[in-house]
Structures are given as structure tokens and as C-alpha cells.
Image 1: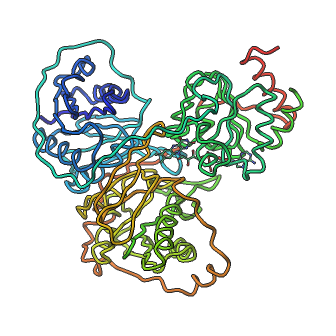
Image 2: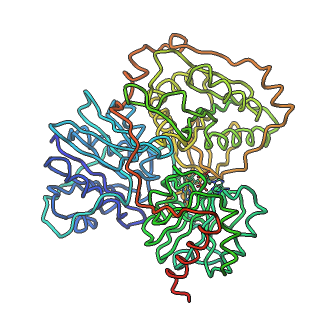
Image 3: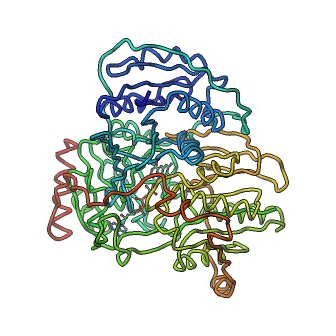
Length: 316
Length: 265
Ligand SMILES: Cc1cc2nc3c(=O)[nH]c(=O)nc-3n(C[C@H](O)[C@H](O)[C@H](O)COP(=O)(O)OP(=O)(O)OC[C@H]3O[C@@H](n4cnc5c(N)ncnc54)[C@H](O)[C@@H]3O)c2cc1C
């Protein structure tokens, strides 16, 4: 095949949006034929959603279980790669792919890069770009001598294709596998009776820059005065300084309705940005002028959050 | 029972830094080293298992790196690791996650632990691959992004929760020996006491070489890596308009932006 094999991702019967973004990225690979595989019980149900322009083939892989299982995915995707010999395999940089992609690449000697946000192919040579040193530099990598390269792509970067198409649909039989782990149940994150961050229009968010728990009260009071909902980065929630329901980011809440996001002492890790980088007006306050939060902010203040907070309080 | 905890000494950039002459990495003079944040949690998780069963557990911290890595390993000894192993050979320089995993897998074969913990990712390169690639080389069961873990030493299985996007948890039971990558927040890592820091300074750090692990030079370093770095560069900075002036002036402007964006008078 020597084309692109895209592994679509579904969870609890829903196609994850990143699946279509992968198909958008696949089209930038210099016209290689694109096949997309979906692994699930009754996978045919996902075919219509994956039938978008640029897709030549949808491969359905029937699995007995609907939830992710490392052994099952490693075995099925591994068999698919051996059968199709793609030049490039695209998957999401997601918690599920964390669970098997590296093992697959390691065992079979594939080229491998994760959290890729730019991919190009010129003259048959594949080049992927990812971040390094806490996203402060870009790192360009290639894969000399590798016939197959697995790339795990960052979500919310590549544009999904629009429209519909009529790709060939084929079924691939996954080899039988005896899995060494047994899925039990999903547990919803604690919602509680706290605020719903996804509906907040103005969020004042605090990060590890606040330094100590005793400082939380000051920012809670400031948020109240400003009419903002107090949010936070993960370390603040992990430490129990604010409830988990206030955490913005990949493993927390998405600031879906937010129009103004003021980030104080938040560095802007990619998983935090996942929950807020879309907000129209982002203001970042950080002592580190190189913090990556400034790359998504509309306005930036290089300064101390306590000084700014104190001065800001006088205006409200 | 034995738990192997794979740790990494991560690098943060100094405010002003320069790239190496070949442009493929930052010049080592501009790096500030520390123990990876995630590894603090995986070490603590091992110590908790040991404490819960009254101590019949040996915790071995293992890291791949040059002598400067001893500092990170001493931190692990101070926080509860019983032994520390550092693996190094000049040929290992430039190893990516996959090459490091091959080395760790060889070390795990030699140590034969019941569990191998690694961090979900490292705070510098954030590849999120080393632990699971190690499991791949070993052929062991594995799970990534573990935010809750229950295991009784000697048991054939462990119960864990993977933390998925949006905070959704997925509980599963896994056979041991297994490799688990540990997520932030799974526990509250302890601080090392002054006394334990002093004791750790006196403990030996065991060294292992390529030959000790029956590896050859082509399997490690750049040769044994799954990708080759072409170049590193500072990306174009985003669009943030910097608000200049004194804190009072900056806050005044911020107040105006807030009023404007929220439509408040
Ligand atoms: C699978 C996975 C999921 C994750 N999910 C999330 C998530 O949902 N949400 C999330 O936030 N993180 C998440 N993370 C963690 C993420 O990688 C970072 O560790 C985290 O976002 C860092 O939080 P922070 O910016 O508050 O802390 P740090 O990165 O430590 O940044 C603190 C910042 O404060 C600044 N600062 C310090 N003092 C001051 C001062 N006095 N004035 C001004 N600035 C100051 C510093 O310059 C620094 O930039 C996840 C990680 C993984 C692997």
C-alpha cells in the first residue's frame, strides 16, 4: 500500500473529533492514498462519519470489546500495519494511544514521534515537528531508513476535511488475542454541586505560580469582585486547593463558553491549553517572559501575579 | 517483592540559552536539571505499597544517564528507594525514548521486578512513551496514565484506574508483572527529611554498563532511536500584545480590558 493508515479513535460508541483531524493531516502528506481504520464492536456504524473527501478506503475492524484495551489494540493495529505496509500511520496523541503506540513502535522497529503538530513530506521524506523543553523550542525530526513511521498527532491542530465522499469499505479480521487486562467500568469525574466551568463566560485561572494554599483566598476574593469564575491548572486541583471541577484542560474541563480568560501563574502546558486556547480574549500574567501561555494570549503582562492582583483589586 | 521505578533527570532551559553548534539541541551549559515531576509520584506510589504491607518490598530506582544523574537518584534514595542503579555508556548519549526503553527493559530483565513504574511523561520532552515502550520490549502487560492503583504484594493481578480525557476514569484489572505509567495527583509525594537526605548521600549508586546488560552500541544512542533530530529552533512567538509599564499601569489596562470584554460599565 505504502500509503497513509489513519487509526480513528472512538470512545463509548462516539467517534472522537480528533479522528477527522487526523484525516485532514493525512491529506497534507503529498498525495499518498489514505485508508482509515476503525476498531470497535459493529464498526460499520462509523463508516458514514469517516467517509470524507481524501479518504480512499475505510477499514472496519470488528472487536469484541468497546473500551480500549492495550493488548487488543496492539495486536489488531500491529496486524493491520503488517498487512498493509503503510509508509505513515497517523493516530491521536491521546490517553489511549499512550497505552499502546510506543510498545508497537518498540517491538517492530517503526519510526516514531508523538505530540506532533506539523507534518510534511517532501521528495518522499517525512518530517515531523514537535515541541521540546516544555514547548519552548520546536524540534524537527525525520526517520531515516524506516519503512513505516507512526506519528501521534496533537488534537485541535489539523483541520478536518469538509464534505462527504464514497470510499471503498473493507473489513479486516483482527487476530485472536488473549488480553492480560480486563476492563471493568467507567467512572465519571466528580461533578459535585460546584460551578460548571464549561458555561462560565469569564474565568480567572490560577496556576502553580500562586505558590501556597494560603494565597487561594486572595484570588477567590478577586474573582468575586471581578465577577469571574475562579478556575485553575492541574497542580492546584491535585493539591486539593480547589476542587477538581475547577480544573481547566485536557483531563479537566473545557472553557467552552468562555470569552475572557485571565491566566495567573499558569505556564501554558499543552494539556492546559487544550481546555482554553480557543478563548477569544486571553490575558496571561507570568514572571517568565518565555512561558508558552504567552503564545496563545492576546494580551500579556510579564510580571508578578501578586502585585498585579493587588493593583487590579483597586479598580473593582 | 520488588518494584522498579524508572526515573529521569529532566532539563529546563535557562532564561537566555543557546543552541549547540550543530543546531540539533540546546547547549548543555544552559540547562537546569531536576528529577522529573511525574517520577516523584511513581516513587511515592512504590513507597506507599511498601509501607502498606509492612516493608517486605524492595524499591529500586533506575535511571539512564551520565554521572550528573546521581543527584536525581540520591533524591529517590532520600524519599524511600532502597537501591539506586545508574546505567551509562557514552554510546547511550542521544538516546530517544525508545532507545532508553530498550536499556530499561534490559535492566528489568536483570532485576526481575514484580512491577515497573515510570512517569506518564517527562516535563522536558513530553514524549509519553518510555514506560510503555519498555513494556513492549519486555512483552509485559501495561497501562498508561494510571491515577489510582491497588495492589497487594504477591497478588497475580492489580486493579487500577486510567485517567482519560475530560477526567473520565476507566477501571481495569491487570496481570503482573506489569508496567504502569503513573499520573500526577495519584498521591501526595513526601518531602525528604534532612536526615534521610544525609543517609542517602552515603548510600552507593550501582553502575551498569552496556556490557553488563548485554546490549550493543548500535541498539542505543542515536543509532538505536526511532527518530533523528534534524534541528531545534525557537518558534515564532504568538500574538500576545505585551502590556508595559509599572504594575499599577499594567493593572489599569487589564481592568479596562476586563470591562470591555465583559461589557461592564
Ligand atoms: C495526560 C495529562 C493530562 C493533563 N491534564 C491537565 C489539565 O487538564 N490541566 C492542566 O492544567 N494540566 C494538565 N496536565 C499537567 C500539565 O502538563 C502541567 O503539569 C500543568 O498544566 C502545569 O500547571 P501550571 O502551569 O500551574 O504549573 P507550572 O508549569 O509549574 O507553571 C507555573 C508558572 O507560574 C509562573 N510563576 C511563578 N511564580 C509567579 C509569580 N509570582 N508571578 C507570576 N508568575 C509566576 C512560572 O513562571 C510558571 O510559568 C496534564 C498532564 C498530562 C500528562
